[in-house]
Each structure stands twice: as C-alpha cells, then as structure tokens.
Amino acid sequence: MSHAAANTPVSTAAGTAQSVSAKAEAGRLRLFCFHHAGGSAWSFAGWAHRLGRSVEVVPVSMPPRSVSASGVPGGVSTMDALVNEVTRQLAPALDEPYAFYGHSMGSLVAYGVAQRQLAAGRRPPACFVAGAHRAPHLPPAPDLAVELSDGATLELLLGLGGAGRLVTENPGRVRAVVDRLRDDLQVCATYRYPAAGHRPLPCPVHILTGDRDPLVPAADAAAWRTHSSGHFSVRALPGGHFFNREHKDLFFAELRRVLGSAEH
Image (tube, rainbow, N blue to C red):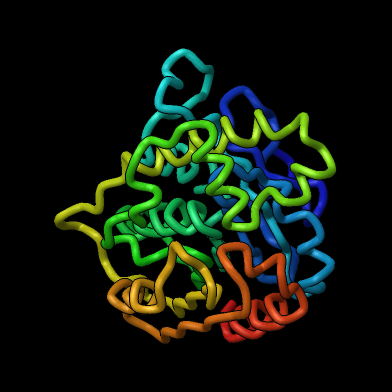
C-alpha cells in the first residue's frame, strides 16, 4: 500500500498491495478522508490542491461492502466489520498526528475507527471533522431506515444531488451507482450504537452540514457535542447533503480553518 501521491486512494480491500507510508512528511498534517455511501476514494480527487501543502490528503478506499458479501474476497457485510477492517489497515499509519474527515456514511466509519483507536490505547485523531451525518447515537434518517427499491434508491440519490451529472453525462453507470449505494445503505443499517464503551473524542470535533440537507436537521448535527470532550463547533454551509460540492470555495476555506487549529 505505498502512498505514492498525496491524493492517491489508500486501499483497504484484502488482496491489494498498497499502503500508507508510516511517516507523514515533516510539517504536514495527514488527513484521512472517508467517502459517502455509494461513493469511492475518488470522491476526494482534487482535495490535495484545494487544501494546500500543509495537509497531506489520504483518501481511504474501503473494502467491498454488501449484506451478501460473505462470498466476496475481503468483503464485509456489517458496519462493525467494515470499521474493524479499515482500522486494521490504517493502524500502522496512525502513530503520528493525523486528522479524519468523513462525509455522510464516511463520518460513521471515521468515528468508529477513532473509537477503536481510543479503546486500544492508541493515538486518537488530532482533529475530527464530520460532514453531512447526524450524531452516531441517533437513529438513522427515516428515508434510510427502510430497504429501498431501485427506483427509490435513484430518487434518493437524485434528490440529494449526488447523481445529477452522472445521469446526464454517463447514464450507463447509473445501474452500478444505484447498486453500490443500496449496498452501502444496507450495511449502514446494521450499525448499532453500543450501550457502553464509547468515550468522547479528546480532540477538536467540527461538524459541517448543509443548511438544506433533508437527512441532517440542525439539532441532529449539534448532538455530536456529546461525543467531544474538547473544542466543538457546528457550521451550516449553504447547500444540501453534498454541500461540499455545491460551494467548493466556502467548504474548503472552512475545512482549512478547522484543520489549521489542530495540534500536530
């Protein structure tokens, strides 16, 4: 898993040979980025340029995910198994200061990895940023709590702004994207917040939301405060569930600001 470039996805799928180098470049904060449901590590293409030389962007490519993944080499079928596998693969690179950014489903995966770091007595993130996800102890959004048909899955994706260009520019890929999104949502549905054992993150926690996101009401975003014992902030940016794509200059300015306050 050699990290050849600052914006090269880090694969956590079994059978791959890439890995993150053990040491970050001097003076740079390593930012591990966890993608949304139905997305991929390439969702973070261009982030290295946007965030500048002080941040080393490391997109995390998660293993194959499906509730029927038992026959898929390296595949996972539950959120717990997904978090365990990602934690196992990333652990060697988490000995030096680092930060997490997760978007939507990625926020839940990043939070799980951070919790496992704490439980094992290892270094927690220097900064944790969650985008477009309600606090992990809350139940899922009603629209995501039921099994969706193909039509309902595509309608959800279009309604959230995640596939508009795809439908018009590459309609042949819609089938694969719908399947991947539905698989991810089914895996997310297996998540259960533990009754005991989770600890507040001892680092700055910053929550970013879209002010028109139908899946993350303001109160549900603010509820992340329960999961922080340090500095905490919530910022609503213009846009919907994919606000990070709608107003890129504003989003990256805010992300640079919160990452700049991390100790590393």
